[in-house]
Image 1 (cartoon, rainbow, N blue to C red):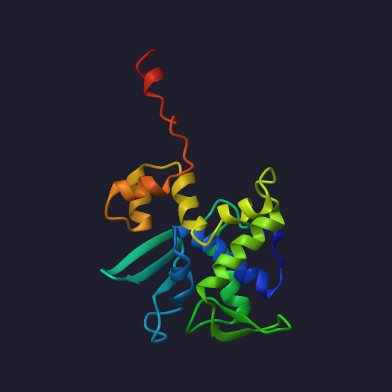
Image 2 (image 1 turned 120 degrees about the vertical axis):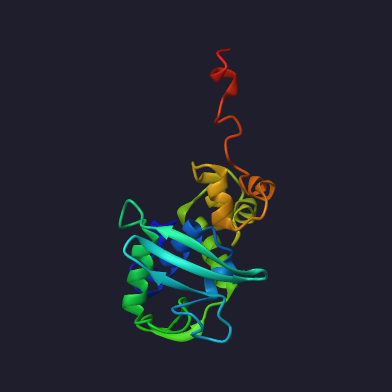
Length: 197
């Protein structure tokens, strides 16, 4: 999906959205409500603090704030922190919303915060452009992927202990986390073989 994005300002932004959203297990509304700093805007849903080892997101929720840690990736091309840093640098964002619209000519970032609908459209468009799940009819394929795919995708693909996924997603119960792990291999841990059968 990342390979389908251009290398202009719009592409840098969209790459950062996909990578931060996936690595953080974020809802699309959480992605677009992020600000550069704490209380930069009245409608802020949280803020980002870039550190040497990663980025710390502080998200405001119904029950208070929660922190989401996103470490640096193993490759510059897929590193969410690198993608965010590049977007902020080239868009010249040092205050206000993190993810904003880009001018028509694609040369500068505006001050207009993106809506969560942008994230949903971005996912559907990049899925279509990447040709994912070609065996499915287009309508089924696009229905399968949505703005929620970033959050569910992390839960399903992370090969770590369930409690870490639960913490990253901010779930109060392990049962809710298990619902998100919809595509995970149910038989990945084979107790039958482990018991010697």
